[in-house]
Image 1: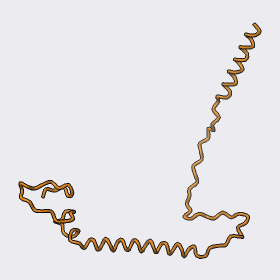
Image 2: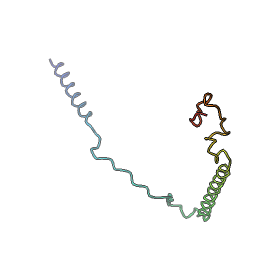
Image 3: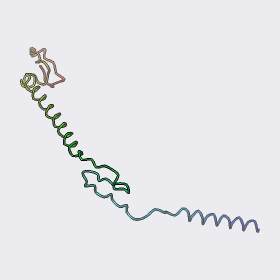
Image 4: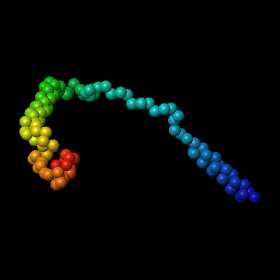
Length: 120
């Protein structure tokens, strides 16, 4: 009988411990949304030895040079597109998007074109 009481007591303690550990420990507060990032550039963090670092004076000039290089590429691409637009395959509407003019076939022999979706 004594062994049975000890077993029931042990099971009761084990049940209470399991129920206690099974409780939800998560917070009921809603998580905070992230702060909005309005900075265009990152600010440098200042440390204890910030006075040892040399400041770069040409940083703004380098950015301007990179910007001008990108503009040159854009202008070059636009000039190339304008040169291509002067070719007859882009000017003449009878080309219908083809590299060469499509052949004019008789009505019975016309085929459906996959490029321009017209029969010719």
